[in-house]
Length: 569
Image (cartoon, rainbow, N blue to C red; front, side, top):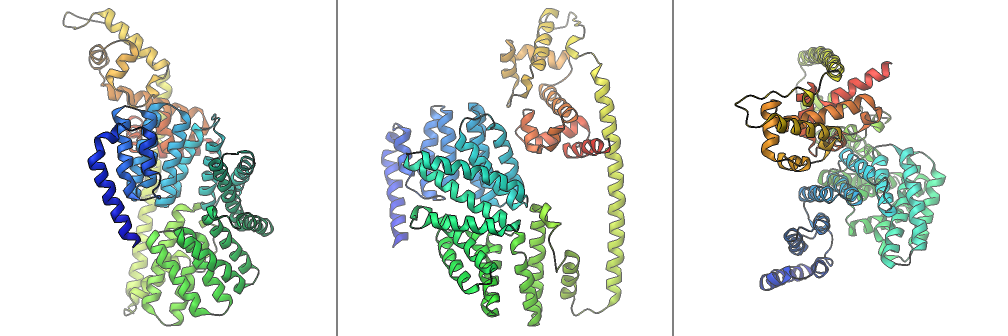
């Protein structure tokens, strides 16, 4: 019945838009927003009205409303790929609008898409750091603490628990204080939600740091504060999950199952699949403590099902596959053993990529080499010819030797390129700028020496003021900035200086960022995306390609060589 109602509502909306579409464009933004505000997150039906909102903003060239429209599109779009496209659009128009708070909010929004929809934590962290940079001088404390909270989230998942603790303590204090002070109901609820989420995430960090007394205290505070608060159902599910884990640690599996079952029901209802994966894992652990292995294995298999569907895995639930492998071995289930071994190898590849700090510290009963060897044996269980094993080992050693030799050659080549680049940069400091060269004209020249000299002086001022760091520059926009015209500027660049405008711009930007990397060590810790933004580019791939073209090496290799050089001194 509910499905039929939704279909009828959608048909009604489409029909209404058809008969009233022209008049709708004349309605206010507030009136159009009221049409999509009633829909739930990821409900594509709302996009009919969001697109009307966006079209109105585009027709009026209202950048502020365009940013708002793209933020709404992120919220209501169902497909993660489309969310990411809308997030990029929000960033473009926020940068064009020029408000640092809106730029910070847009980068935060993109980071949230990476984090929650793609489960890509490193790209999320890069976006959060850019958002943090733009919000440093902001007076919007709510925005700053929201960014800080998300930084804490991704750092805790990457294993930087001590750093995450500092973030969550800061945000918990802020949200708690303003939840008490603000009288506006909506703002008060937002601050309360921020407070409960902060102390829950703080409790998980304490769990990983083995500070169980602090963890238990925060779990109890959360449960006490959320009783009979229906507006905080997702948060209640998290705290009940935390309580179940706490009871399990205390050796009370029956009580733990009661809390975990309640958490399961809530988290299923709010579709928090990542948290639900953890709940299933700890329900399996609870049944193991009760010596009910059959039920335990059922829940461990549920974990595998969710991992396959949503590609969510953490070091915390890695042992889920070790248990399933052991269970398959005990039943002499070769197919099951092979499948779960493959799943564990996939889990390790994800963990090693996203949890670099933790992966080196994890105790593994099934290390990668052993798993790979077992997988090979299972796949070739009918082949007992030892000669094949010797061939495989020999081939592996030859391949490894080749990789090592090739790696060393590449390192020597990069070191030579790095030294040559430093030498070239040192020599270029004493060279006369192209704008200071004498101007020679002949009878064939289209412009007088005075015009050319004037353009050269303006280019020199353009460089001195670092106006080339602005994004989306074109010949007409630069000519307008200089008080000239595109014809004069193009002629001086192409004929007098012998360089095209795109090449001239990329040289200025790459030389500028290269100098920063050499002179200020803090830029060596910036992401490639952040460095691209720093020198006026918005495209990571284009920045990397331009850096290679100008400097003869990729920015990642240059940064690594510079860090090695500083470390040796």
